[in-house]
Amino acid sequence: MAASTRSGQLAVSDTEHPGRRDVSRRTDPAASATASVVFVVDDDASVRDSLGRLISSVGFKVETFANARAFLGARRPDAPGCLVLDVRLPGLSGLDLQRELAETDAALPIVFLTGHGDIPMSVQAMKAGAVEFLTKPFRQQNLLDAIRSAIERDRTMRADRAERAELRRRYASLTPRERDVLAWIVAGLLNKQIAAELGTSEATVKEQRGHVMAKMQAGSV
Image (cartoon, rainbow, N blue to C red; front, side):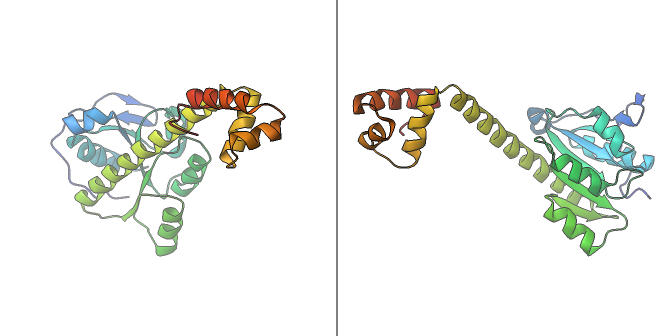
């Protein structure tokens, strides 16, 4: 596919790994604060180089890959960022990679690029959660705006996952009886009613309720 971005002035790293290239250099405060990585997957080397220069010129760390398998082989699930992904790739296509990543608990927001875009394909990608679907040639600013939106979405997703993981950790710290009490609290029962259901005293339920509040770090339950 023909490169659609103009060559920038930023130098590109000479260090090349099989199927992978790290082309990041300059950073600005906004980008360095996020530690986000923009992963570019495109089978055209000239496109990878052009996109790498463009994206790194605004301060983001960039890693480029020639195909989906190379990306999956080098991927670090804990690395924050987004994926700039060509639809048509040798072997595993961009849409196939999107489906595979969606099955994990650490899927990255995706900005799709294509030189052969059509409406059904873009609808499929967007319904599956893509941030944007850009047809080459596209405006550089449109791509950069889409990347910023994708990185912001990734931040939100990671914060949500961290919150859910913390809630699971707190719940796991409850004893079996405390979990029973919590279940009845969620169902809307009062202490007296919970005591009747569990065959214990209201004072005991009140004490266990306090333990639940402390362990779940809840203001009130």
